[in-house]
Image 1: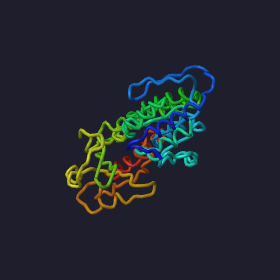
Image 2: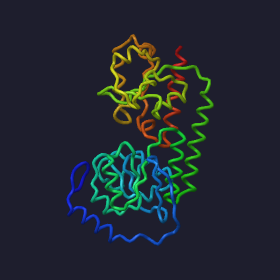
Image 3: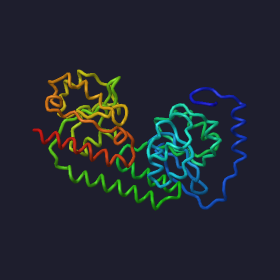
Image 4: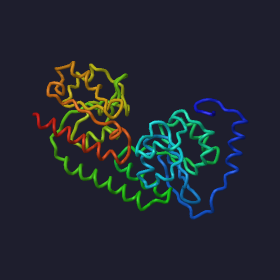
Length: 302
């Protein structure tokens, strides 16, 4: 099995090249093009019919674009929608079985700019398989990415409708909370090491959308490592965390040991299912709505 990172032999590349040569693409039905988040224009002779998604978020976005039936390969933790669990996995987003991917004959691979190793994506490109790299970092970028994927897959009607639904939903929340009283927030994105997000991160934008003030928003790194002492010093009014899994709330337990923090004293310790806010997909609308409701609860306790 050929995996990344690692080395591969001439025999491997020859076998992969032969497999590609045996695959005859259908007759062209009209070129489609889109520019990805790496700044590369990707053009296909015809809309993609066999798509590989190399991150769980990419899998969700392809389904949101109306092209779920065209997905032939995913990676670990691609668990939404339910149908994605039945698609062949080609490894993880950092270590992929390239031979298995080629056997599935994708005509478009959806990569993750900072999540998939660059050498992995480059090797796929070197084999002549188009790679569209995504990393939406704003709400609008989520909608735009859906539209781009729909264009590349030839599913514009469904994809553009879903993109607009998300766009309008976020606009509605922005209007509803534009004058909300601010709530200082610590969002815990990881436990060991303890990590948060800054204001440039998409989760940071969820905090702002809901009238929150991110206590670590000014830090330079998108996902900074912090200490428990830093959280205590910041004294957030609300603490929100995702945890490992959709029903795992234990990350909030540690903060009950610090009754001097306003969030603990007021019982403003809130669980947010991580897949609703930690993947840049249309489900962020549901996650943002829930996030805003938690901050409303904190305001009501003043």
